[in-house]
Length: 78
Image (cartoon, rainbow, N blue to C red; front, top):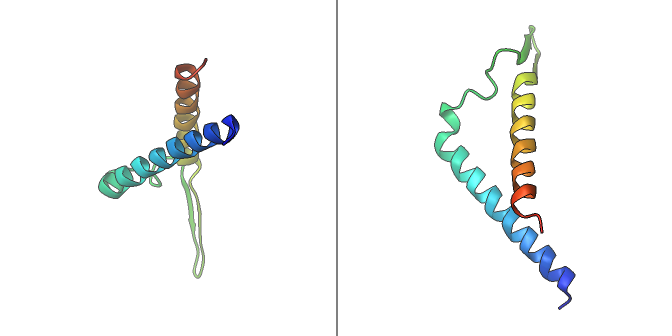
């Protein structure tokens, strides 16, 4: 097996573990989190239509993921 495949395998295992932990966290605490109901999330209700745009939630999740990826890059820098 080439070293590149070994590295890709490790990356996939870490990504899978992160997704598993995120899924477990959301399964347990998902109903208690205000994500999707933050000030700045846009909801337009009409007679037969609902348009939902989670602007603030998207910005918050983006900032959290950016910080997480920065920290992981900093910790695993060679």
